[in-house]
Image (cartoon, rainbow, N blue to C red; front, top):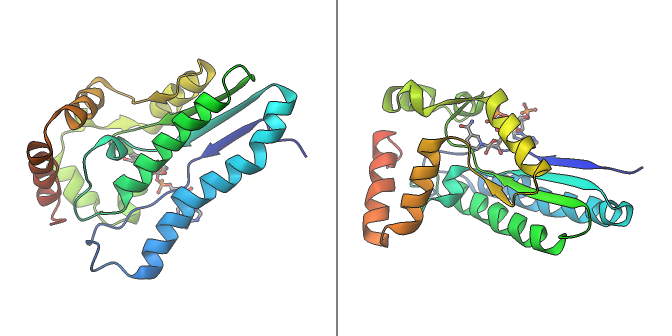
Length: 187
Ligand SMILES: NC(=O)c1ccc[n+]([C@@H]2O[C@H](COP(=O)([O-])OP(=O)(O)OC[C@H]3O[C@@H](n4cnc5c(N)ncnc54)[C@H](OP(=O)(O)O)[C@@H]3O)[C@@H](O)[C@H]2O)c1
């Protein structure tokens, strides 16, 4: 069996705080969003490289470009890992015909916030213009992996937030994301 495309998309989050989240849930987050993408990539990439064509799209998050995700403590770091790992693979596969991209969406209309029980909080805290449709986000991800971009963040506002997250000194950046977490009742 040969695999030409891999999209590491499965994911979920827990918003009740690190201490109130059980170890089994933490382990599952790491397994689904970190271990599985690593193992699946290791499984399919050698064949892609040998055939001279392949696409790997890792669905990370804007959260992975932020200094922290308060109350959803492991989610951001796991997504940061996925971004860095994608960049490393992008470097390693240059010139092979294989493209690897990390897609970093901000708020997107899917079932994600129903599953983690935060739909009401996020809908009340953030205006409609901050949200994107899943179809558009998926298209941007697909275009980016076709264009061999190592990372793409859909939407102008999300790019501004990602840039701010990287530029602000720690104290200010943590104030910014701490305020975000408090608005969502996560802290
Ligand atoms: N929605 C957003 O605002 C947003 C923003 C940034 C990044 N993301 C990322 O986008 C990706 C897709 O999420 P989504 O927004 O489309 O949310 P979603 O509608 O809840 O879909 C999540 C997907 O992950 C699968 N999944 C969840 N837990 C799993 C597990 N333990 N084992 C295997 N599969 C599991 C689900 O499968 P089942 O349906 O079978 O459970 C579903 O296909 C995730 O990696 C998420 O972190 C989402």
